[in-house]
Length: 109
Image 1 (tube, rainbow, N blue to C red):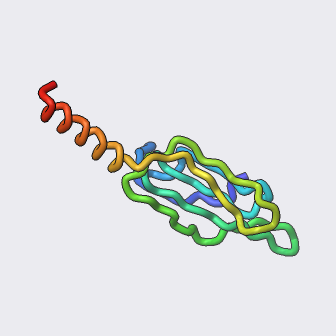
Image 2: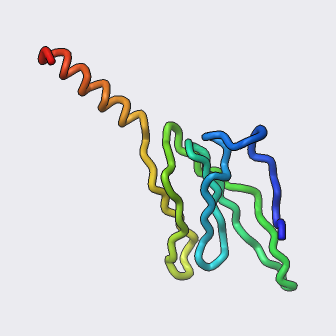
C-alpha cells in the first residue's frame, strides 16, 4: 500500500536525496527518511476516526556536511518521537587530516 509518494530529487539515488535510510517511531507516530549526506525529513503520521492514515508535511532536520551511517527510531514511551542517527561531520574529519599533514610536514616526515 502506498501512503505517500513525493518526489525528493532527480532520477536515481544520490547522496543528498532522502530515501537511503528509513526509520519509524516504534509506536507508529512518525517516520524519518534520510539521505547519505545532509538531508533528513520527518513525517508525522495522523490517523482519523476511521483508521485512515495521512502524513503531515515533512519537517526538515538537515545538518550540513554530515554523513549518515545508520538511522533508528527510539522508544521513549508516550513522549514526542525521537530518532537517533549514527553520523559524522566531515568538516571535522577533513580539518583533522589537514592538521596531521601540516604537523608531519613541519616535523620533517
